[in-house]
Figure 1: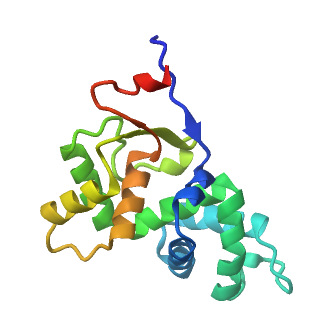
Figure 2: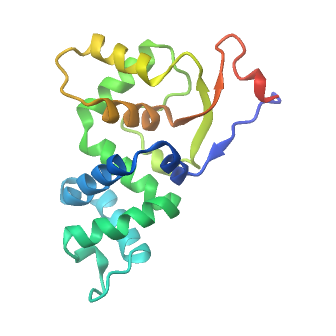
Figure 3: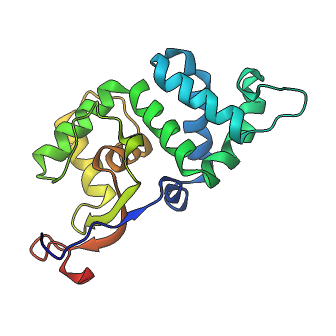
Amino acid sequence: MDDTQIRYLPFHAINEFMLDDYRLKVIQSVLRDVEKLPGERRGRLNGLIRRHINIPGFRNSAIAPLPLRVKGAVTAFERHPEFTAQVLQGWSELHPDLRARVFEMLKARNWEQLLPPEADRSKLPGFMTQWPKTETYEVLDQTYAEMFPDSPAESDDIRLMCVWIANRLPYELFEDEEEGAEEA
């Protein structure tokens, strides 16, 4: 085995990379459409809501009105990596076309270690920390727009899906020819 190690950040580390309004939008969309998720994902998410979100007047927080669940979910998303992972996996499952397109784009750009788009990334230990330096969000936005000119996807959604599909946060930037040698 070689001496390179893969480092991971817990899933809730994504909060350092998300704007508050966008985080709220993602959480709200997942909790609003939770019934559209596959049974297993819905069950895990509702179980984590019951465990991590306390809403006065509700023994089962998962059945509280949406605005109350969303308010409590923001704190859970910021503090509990397993909750963050389930929300993001659910979000990706609610956007299968975007998920497939981003996977295709990253593959075309020769990103390595990509799991199939439908893989459950919430089972991973967290986000890998290395991100190719030349793959800025602007470059990825432009590539996506060129590859899929008719896609209505917004920039924030494309960027979040890139992070989720690649299972990477732009934490440690590296040059392609060095392949992360800076870390050694």
